[in-house]
Image (cartoon, rainbow, N blue to C red):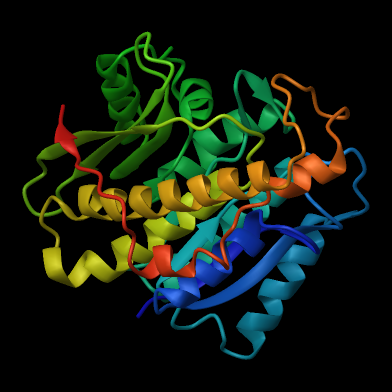
Length: 317
């Protein structure tokens, strides 16, 4: 069982950030403590959002309280998602350093929430901070295609490009890389996960890919869910593989199977509402009832978290 500190966003209603991550991590047998970087009424895919972005001082103060009571001892994993500001990135970097001093075996998982589909949703200065400050400390990073391109400067159009991007992230000091979704070639119906694992024992590299179907819709929080599933599965496989290559690919197969099931259930639920989901609606013009239909069906899909019915096979690249 892992003990995980998760630093991400929070919403009152819906499933993004810590709301998307906590339940799957707990259901798969891990202890989770959370620090929220924001508290919003709902995610930003809705037309209206109320709430507050927390300053770095708030994050540091909560962590100081954990330290004062010795509650920071025993964390095996630090999982980070949406930061939003450069000050928050600095605060999390310091947190990772201090937790690493307490536990030199700490697994630091960075989901570099920067943007998607060619658009940033954080200040541009955060790209360099993730690249230069967080990636060198990270054990595992989980960028999407756009984020991997931002961090490495490599445009990804082929599996060879994705491998080069993984290699560049290895050069930054990250031993485990998962590009969670990339459009490869002309097949618009399939996305690819691309992973690369440096074996701790031999120093050899294990690179792989997994193809999975792309579903049309306005999904939010899917990256947060996937990162949590990957952390949970990888933590559980650590003893089985004992430092040998293969744990990351197996964890990705299981996480992808659950993710695909949850996404399909979500799409089916939205269709059952009878509310049209017209394509290419920009943010700010999407009806709230339609957006609500796309909230991830995590709780009704709990059986798919523990025992996914889909099967995805990683192949070497």
